Length: 259
Ligand SMILES: NC(=O)c1ccc[n+]([C@@H]2O[C@H](COP(=O)([O-])OP(=O)(O)OC[C@H]3O[C@@H](n4cnc5c(N)ncnc54)[C@H](OP(=O)(O)O)[C@@H]3O)[C@@H](O)[C@H]2O)c1
Image 1: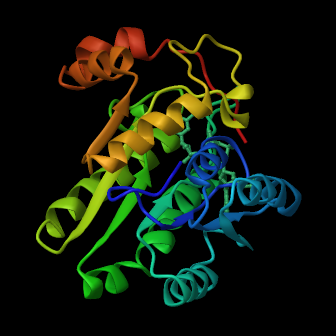
Image 2 (image 1 turned 180 degrees about the vertical axis):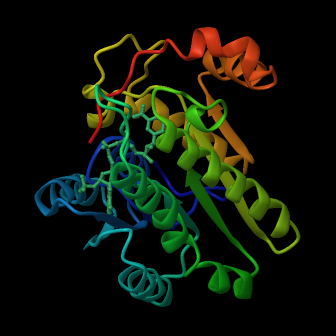
């Protein structure tokens, strides 16, 4: 994607070694653009980086766990010092559900650490820099599971609701600073995260198509980028109803495998 007046030049994306993060990196890859890409699987991350370079982008990769706050602080700060970041996408995340034995404390803590602390560790280091410049954009990957809690994956739903609220609050708090915050709430996307699901996933979408929807929403600086509409709207409406009315259906949703 070419650089224009409303597309960012220097972009940092976490979880770029796979799925949605990789699709976003590839969609943004273009001559003149600087991409900071993060993951844990070096080989996969390098594969994506090489494809981005072949599209003309200048790419820097980093193997780091998003739960490591000190390492993330160093990496994000250094990236911003070298190339002031226009857009930071806190995308890395994990998912798991009740499986056959339920969700234990270890799994809950692991999901919260990655999906909540990981987001904090990605965006907090860059906020002071963006505020100083009076410009910049932050994108937080939530999910439609953050719109209406899914009993089939309690910790995942809670983590996505948490980062949605965090992002939406932050958007208001930074409204007059020149820094904009967007929260992304996708439905089902075909990635390794959903490959393990053995139940029907309505309106599932390719990561490439999802990346285009996200990029369009970010260009318009939308507060909430939620899609597909035909899944988002019913879930949003259901979230307004009393759990007493919706439990009989939602409690019967098929369980996602545990970690
Ligand atoms: N797929 C969907 O249907 C869907 C729907 C709504 C929202 N989302 C959200 O979209 C985001 C991306 O998911 P995806 O579907 O693209 O899944 P994915 O293909 O499994 O990719 C997850 C990415 O996150 C990285 N990651 C996970 N834990 C990490 C950690 N502790 N430290 C650093 N990196 C870590 C992974 O890196 P390594 O593999 O290199 O470790 C990988 O690059 C997630 O936040 C997910 O919750 C997905």
